Length: 236
Image (cartoon, rainbow, N blue to C red; front, side):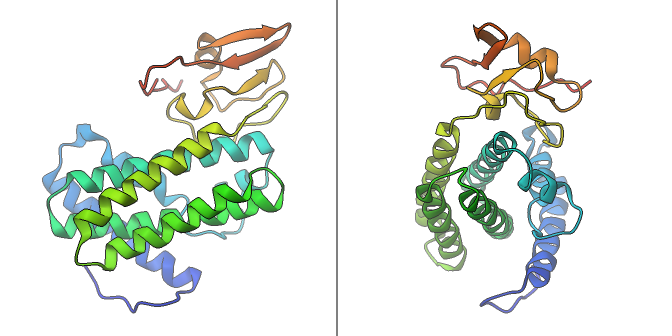
């Protein structure tokens, strides 16, 4: 890993650091990890969120979109962060663990900024932002501490708690335009209320309908049940 000065960084410096960490981590994964585990895909998804603000970016469009899109995007982000930190717990390779924590810090910071923006719009409550801030500081602490293993367990638990907070946010996407979202599984949509006027990302509308119930005439709700299955989407 290349050396970086600690302390407060600009968005440009953070972007450079995270790109370097992602590059080195992906090279290590390709050499040592079974591609079927999906970690490389997770890192690729997380990279979209690590350089906010960026003019005319996909992320910027989502942040400024409907409340429903914002909440679903937060669910995706918190899920990716929890998965990344759980994968970090599973590795015993120090350089890989450090790189994964570095990427996690950037993703958590970007997530916190998204949540702050959502709070300003009245979409989430302050408790979600407090949890995100605490998690960001905890990840940084785990990265810089000699007791990484013990702290990483607590950090992963904090990420799961934040994920649950995001999952508990009610989503009414009736008539909403969700077409800018990048959705790889139905899990972030669980509980979402929608109508025929809701615009979905390309290729997923039929699969959403399959996992939805009509709760009143013309109004539907995604219901995945109690299973923890990921319900991966087949994109057409």
